Image (tube, rainbow, N blue to C red; front, side, top):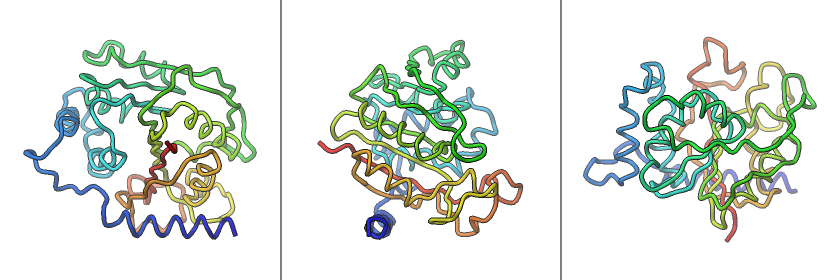
Length: 260
């Protein structure tokens, strides 16, 4: 019964958000200060050609608009990896907002330390223990908390698939505690078929219904779903790193909110 309710919520949200998600037609004269700064960051010479090439697929302007990110926000990026979104968020938040990075935050801060304009990065890597998860090549995370709180938004891009259910719960719980009431939790990841058993082919994919269920169990409300990264020709059959799939995976884009 609980799974059915989650599925109904997910489907209704999909039908609604497919009509209202951010469009690619934002005109320059109607662009917000955040959008103007983000567009400038997208064209920056600090980004490599390969990073810019991914803009068409990752759609950062539309994605961040969907999450409601604005220039005066306090934003935490979880597991920033190589810093693809870091290079966009830091300049766009530099005047009135603040960018934080956690779980790999110190690494990305050191990597960009000599880059002009990125000295405002704040790393708040928590005291956590990351060990092998309950399935091959998955990780789990101990319970933890961030040293900062009262965030307007916490975002994570293509990371939840790396953790088992216990690890995801620790991350969700920590994010919930660190957000201000009404704060946004944005999650993007590669899509796995609902209730499909774990295999080496789908190990870097996540079941969006399961991700929604787990976030709700941590206290979040589902605030929206966008089909920005829907790919009709991804059959959801193959490992996302395969040559025929990489760069063209179907991804779910979920927006959660901490209740006020």
